[in-house]
Image (cartoon, rainbow, N blue to C red; front, side):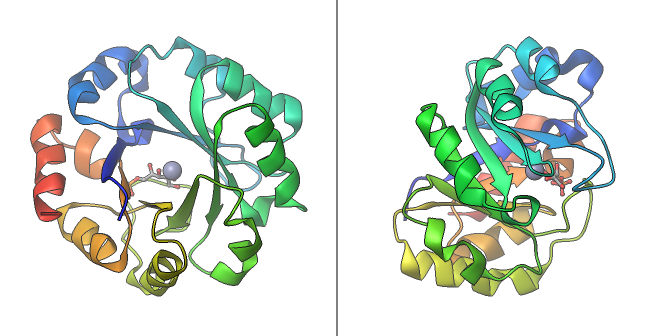
Length: 213
Ligand code: DX5
Ligand code: ZN
């Protein structure tokens, strides 16, 4: 199983002081997860690449595009803003391979995601050209939702198919659900509410890590 990574999601942080929020978790985070919502693929609208540009951290930025049909120039905006990895949604793109190839060509880690009701079969053809797969464990769009355990068979099947692939889970992750996802085979854990919703963010991360021992 690949290395365990913790990715605090800034969707639950105070964006008006984003750099000090990130500073609090910086020494204990492997990735900083940045949720981008366009109001089309998902109802809410969040920040854009100009916001990503102002983030200053030594931790790699994991940009999750909940965006309908992102264009090359739109994706490039996030790469230029400092994204380390970019996730696109299978359901959001007519031909996801187009976006995957563009991200790869730009030497940025490439990830494809599926929503809870999307079958793993939809992305099997991309498994050799991506660095990571994100199995959504809630419907994308909002923080603070309940972990959907029915998504775990997809994680299990994917881990069997790809023993070395980074498998990320996102949505409702806390010290209890992270253990469930870990046992299914996930190794990258996104958590918003269960980290930034707490007063002591470092303790919150340690609690998740402890559950994975
Ligand atoms: C949801 C986002 C998540 C969100 C998770 O659509 O993709 O990254 O921040 O928040 P929690 O951890 O609160 O479920
Ligand atoms: Zn996310």
